[in-house]
Image (cartoon, rainbow, N blue to C red; front, side, top):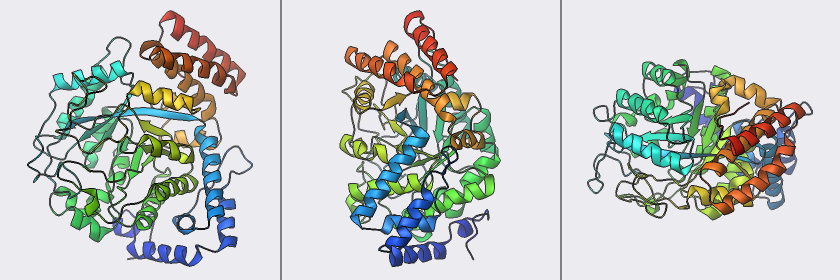
Length: 482
């Protein structure tokens, strides 16, 4: 076996020996100031537009290993610069929707494993899905990530497809879910084609760990035990027509430097084979849950290491969206936002049926997949973001205008996304302010929109956006997009 990013075999594109050699190289060069400065310079924006070269997994691993404080600060500065160039001060908002916690796997870090008798099993009916969606729309959400355990009897692909159809069909008051991302178990090309035809946004699948031996121990039984089938899932998804895929590992299960190298090798593989890297990369850390004690796993990472991982991913894979969920606290999310994060969840519940019938202050805990650290309402999170100078965005325009996969990346690389995403973010924020926001959030938001609309580069688009904002606010019109 040898490392080959173009291979379709997991053992080749996530090659264990290559990762070990990478970690040895990084350790050897972690104090090599000249090399580290060269790597940082290589990653900077080019003179043409806002194009960045990104970094190989080896170069990025050297940055992650470096523990020289002033060079770490230079990494953070570069990460902020790159994030600003591609995503500006926009933060996309979403919420998870848990459909079912029935599962036939035995993942030792997840409370949904089939041997857990403490957690009640629940699967939403279509009427319950409808009620959950209405509750989410009434909060102001436009983008969901649906989650489900792996169970071919209780949660077959037909059930997932029916739920997607139900979600898209609900139009409550001014509400609508405009993008449904899907986080379900690895499946077949045929099923990925069905998901594509159902109009999903991004297909998300966390690798959990790229260390094969650890992976098989952490998944001792069930279909998820098959490391190769799981790791090769993104290739099947893209073969099935899904343009946008989302990677992620569960930090804390294995040594973080190993996971970091594997994650970037997976991104390089997608670029080499399909011509486009991951649409998103998620960075969850293991959290406490029913029957799960995170302290059992001895590879946990500090907030400082977590921030450095995010910065290095942003430098290495400049165009990808980066996601942080309510697993993390308000303080942690504030620390890492500027280093590369472009999407966050807000007002999230990780229970099956956790939204309908509950006030913002209430949350059921009996079917939670993990403890939620940031328990603020969506309105509170939106206001918090704006007070920190960010634009909370509910935009889904690229997906609905066909700007996905390589088409999105092509626009992103020459900076034209700014003429689309910036006004679209402001228009969707105005929808939220008009329909759902508290008075204080509305006041802060409208002041922010008045400032930020002036930053749309193209004069004609800026004026059209100003007109659309007026129609949203004063005429009750909705769903404008560039």
